Each structure stands twice: as structure tokens, then as C-alpha cells.
Image 1 (cartoon, helix red, strand yellow):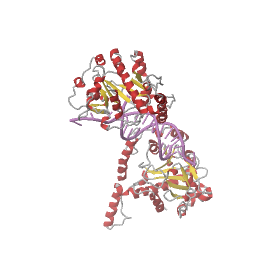
Image 2 (spheres, protein in one colour):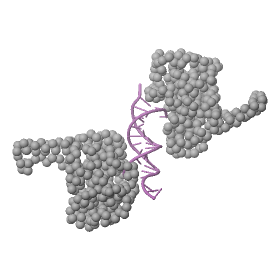
Image 3 (cartoon, helix red, strand yellow):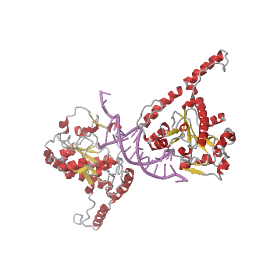
Image 4 (tube, protein in one colour):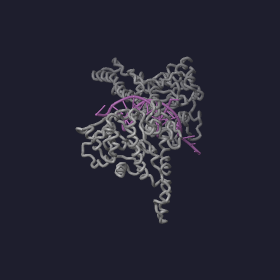
Length: 299
Length: 299
DNA sequence: TATTCCGATAGTGAC
DNA sequence: GTCACTATCGGAATGAG
């Protein structure tokens, strides 16, 4: 399944180039179930979540059984994400990466990093809650964190696939391996450099004030490099504590209050990598992030 | 001279269409004396100011004698208007409408009404003063007011030439005249309707805080209809007491202070014709002014 | 308070 | 707090040799 998921993640994008898929203006403020025959063979990805995880959520059912979609349907505005949990099989693989009875994972329609997924729980009672409330339930939280760990690993692999060739750490490992092979040594016996741990450059969390009502967890690479990153609020929503890491849950009540009160999105723009403050100069930050992106890939 | 002045006024514009002359970006923030041979025969316009008026100002001399321009020269930024009094003969008739030893009259480079002239006194001691100070001198003021009356009349004639065919009052007069002619009556003996007094729709004044340092008096039609009218401050600088009518001088000191303190340019946008308030909605005002312009022409 | 260019800010409407 | 669109508002430079 991992190979399949990766294929889907990359289907939408050419290497390093943010996607321009067939998105129409219609899809901006609403999500309509495509009428045509949807993806096939997606059951395989469903089976990759272990039965134990499904039972953990206590609501594992087939998507159809959950929502019983009678016909193509449109979810407008803040309900736009509902379409994906309502009828995930209706969407092409470029949109819906995988789904099972508990989760639907999609490529964010407006990615704010080079890789940006949304994890959509299908739990009927949780999916309408504010994330702070939904993630208070320790059982549900554990499931989410488990699922996130899986996707963090998959995103890491995708980063390695895309950017590994630029990485100094990866090159060091590759060279050592080649050297060992040339020397006729047993790879499994030799102590090779570790290569780069891309999973450290994957972040996962929820927004303090989500714009979409359906519960969704962002899983994205740390670079914040994307054509869709176009406003101060875009950046700050992924570069300040406005994004609450999934591992920080459960939050204390006072933590929730403190996070909610703060006007994170109007704050100065600060580079996630070097800490330089760009005030309200978004374009200057954008320009700077181009360089940081190149350097980051080379790590 | 009147015929000539009119010809110059209109040379720059096709009927009802704001001008797009050969203005380059260079001229935006500076005014350079053109190197090539300038206009000829402009002496005629000089002679149209009576000797009495010239003597009134006590500084009537030939333009060359006043400024003695040694070579093409550029006046940048807030000194841009100086080029016109420095070497008026260097400019084409589309730019400099007329000049003599006391005044240079030009088409405003960015007209804010369908007709918009600048009257530039050449008086050496006055031309660098703030208009409030310059116009305190009763002798100088009288000369200005005299000159303004002349230009008011010329602008009125230009308005009649351009828009007379739309005017109900003009039509009434034309029809009466035609009727009298058909009846074989003596035009000079018949009491005809007056036609439209376009001079009532000409305003002349100075800005409370001029942007150009050289003393200049605006003479413009009341319509505020122009492609160059693009900002709230543009409009308010000609539609509030920020513009001080030349006939309001001399001002009392307290009047000067009161006018200066007020933030006229940031005020709500109010239609000059119907008084409707557009708040800060400049585009809505612009749209509205299109209609008011048509109605105004029909008066 | 001249212009232009660029960009930040603000309000709207989406179904 | 999604998007896009429009428009308002705000700073900086403007030249010339």
C-alpha cells in the first residue's frame, strides 16, 4: 500500500513543481461528488489499516454504509470536505490518496508545502467537532496519532523520493554503500551512515480555528514552499502555534484558551528555518523561502 | 487670442476624450525643457494682455530676460512647474497654451476635469510662495483675479464648443434664433433666450497644500470627469474647501489656519452635483460621476 | 499635498 | 480560520551624470 499511496501522492505533481490540475472555479467553494465511475481497486488500501485499528474507532463500516450517498451531491463552503468522507470512492486518485472505514486521506486542494495531505476521520460523532474537543477523547486521539505516524512515514518517503538527490546526508550514505559494494562487503554487516531522516521534516496538526467544519488533520512537509502560499495568514497558519501538533494533545483547558485568544495569523512573518523577521512583508518572505527551500533540500 | 487659445486648449484632446499625449514616464516626476525648436508665433498671445495689466504686475519682461535659460534644463519633483515659466517657448502648444511676461498658462498634465488649466504667475518674488501668502498682496491678487476671469471666460467658450450640442439651454436659444431668422427678424433687435452661462461651471482656485512648489492656480470645469481622477485625494482636492476659490482672497489668518488644519482629503466622497455621500467608495463615485456628467452636459 | 509601481489590507460572495 | 475578486490603502521611488 505504501507504494500505491506514494504513487497517488505524486500523481498530481511533476517533480518540485506545484500542481495545476483540472481544478475549476466551481470546486473552490464547494465539493461535488463526481458523477462518473470512480476509482477502482481502492479496497486494497482499506485493508492496510489493521482490524485492530478499525475496531479501536468502533465505527468501521464501508463508506457506503456510513453515508449511503443517494446521488451526486455538493457540499458547499465550510462543508466542502464532507464530500470526501461521504463518497471517497467517487474521486480520482489524484484527489483521494486512500480511504478505509475510518479515514480518508486527500491531497490538500491548496497545498501550503511541497507535500500537504489532509487526514479526514470518518467517525460520525467526531467529524463535526472542533479539533480541540474531538482530540480530547483518548481512544480517538490514539487512533489519530497512530494514523498520523503512518502518514508521516509515507510523506517522509515521498520527500526522499523527490528531494533525496539533493541531500548531502543521503549522498554520504549512498557513497558509503557504493564503496562497501565495491569492496565486496556485506551491506547488512557494514555500519552505514544513517542517511537523512525526512520524517523530522514532516509536521502534523490541526488549526486552532479551522476554516473547514469537517475535522481534518494537516500532514505536511516543513518547507512551506508552494504557489498556493499567498497570504500572511496562509503562512502563519502553518508556522505559528495556530497549528497544534497532534502529539501535543490532549491539551489542557487553559492551553486551549491561550491558543485561541492569540491573534497568531496577524503576527509578523518569521522564517521557519532561520528565524528572520519579515514584518508584514510577505513577498520578501516568499523570496527568502525560495532560497531556504533550496538549502533545506541540500541538508 | 481667444480663438488661438481655444485652438490650443483643444489641440490635445479629441472631443470628450481625455488626452493621451506623448507624455512619457520621464515627464512624470520631472519637466525637461525640450531641446528642439519650440513653438513659433506665440508672441501674439503675449500681446493680448493689455499693457496696463502688464504694468500692474511691475515685472513684465520677456521670458528670456526673466530667467535667461542657458540650456535645456530639468526641473524634478516638486519643482516640475518651474520649467514652464523658465522657458515657456520651449513647449508645444498642446502643453503651453499661452504665455506673456506675467503668466504662463498650461494644460494640466493630469487633468481632473474635462478642461483643466494651470495658470502660472512668473512674478519672481511670488512664484515660490505658498498661495495663501502670495495672494495676500492686493496688487498681485488683483492681477491674478483679472487673469483668472479671462481664463474663466475662455474655458466657458471651450465648454460651449465641446458640449453645447447637448445643452437644453443652448438648444432653446438656437431654436429661437432660427425662428427669428426664418421670420426675417433682425437678430440684434429680438430678445433671445440667453443660452447657457458656462462660466458658472468653471472653478478657479489654489490648493491649501499644493504638491508643486511653484505657485499655480487651477482653472477647471466643474464636472470632475477625467480618466486622471483616480483617487479619493484627487477628488477631494477639487471638491472640498481644500480648493480655495480665487475670489475668496484675501483670506483672514484664522481662515487660513482653519483650512489648513482640516483633513479635507481623507473625508467621505460626496458628489459635487447631487450631494450623495459615497463614503470611501471611490469606484462607486466614479461610476456615479459618469451619469452626472451626462446630465450636466444636458442642462 | 504630483505620478507610478508594488504590495498589504479589507470586504464581498461563493451555494 | 477556505477560495477568488475587487478595491482601498500604504509605502517607496521618481532624475541625472
